[in-house]
Length: 138
Image 1 (cartoon, helix red, strand yellow):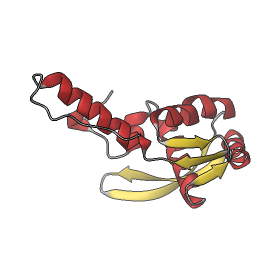
Image 2 (spheres, helix red, strand yellow):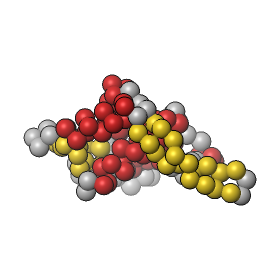
Image 3 (cartoon, helix red, strand yellow):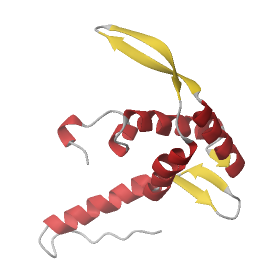
Image 4 (cartoon, helix red, strand yellow):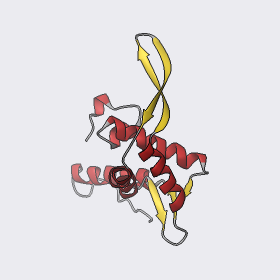
């Protein structure tokens, strides 16, 4: 759920409830982007192991008008990573998994799913026959 009047600037803050999940989701996306948008199963497992062992991340800390970079150690359980980060991101269409090539990749299905939700809402709120029909090609 989100509040349209207080919509966060980071999509991960809309998708995930906990601050640590937001950070891990962002790290996963950055890892995928650094490998041309794709990771194999072994690479994903290595990423999850690095999170499990603890990894240093750089965050911005704001105190008044001053922003500064702060390094902090982020540790996230490997099993929880798969259950609470990767699986939901796959289910929402943010990440696809190619069963034949055994590779994870960044996907645009998330934005298409949100468009479908928007069309469903419009169909629900408009009287029958007034909203134009929309066809999705999947």
